[in-house]
Length: 200
Image (cartoon, rainbow, N blue to C red; front, side, top):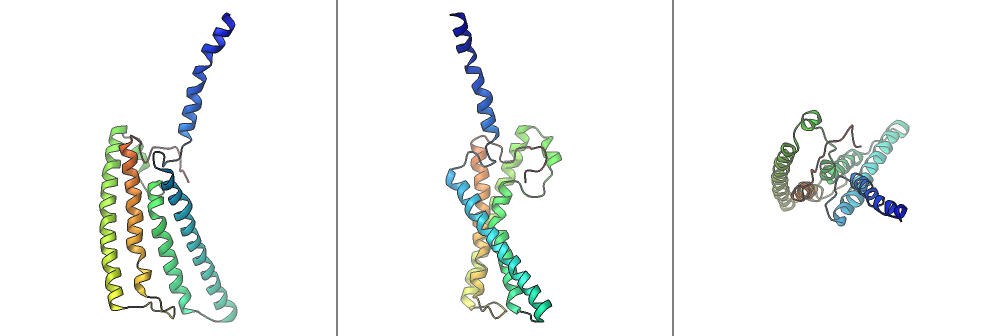
């Protein structure tokens, strides 16, 4: 019947808009394995958040102790510094790969797609080289501090090499962010596509 032919022929064109909507809804890390996004978004960000919340809690405790009890704890200021540094370095790579940093959006959005991809390659390779240098320098410093047996300044008495271990660890995580960008580039995706407004 003519009516059934019209209905069957009209059904297939409805699928592409839905597929495109799903593709547009994909996160910036599309093209990467699922475990990669799980480690970045579920593990690293949650650990970094817990460390930052712990630093805020210790700062509040120290401020309350000073104002209410007239007591100051030497270890609190040092521990807050360690927690903040660990939180930042653990989440630096994730924030970088998701585009949460100061950048020239106006200039980049005006460039053609191929030029943007060329700059993305350049950015990823330079960032990966910097990460390798950070890992090498961090391991050298950790080995030196472990050899001389230096401890922290306050009465925490923590081995300083354990605190500075975040330098090579943060460098490795930072390097993985650029490796993720390179994987996306190899699969034909722009790791930092132009968007309207801030993607917070």
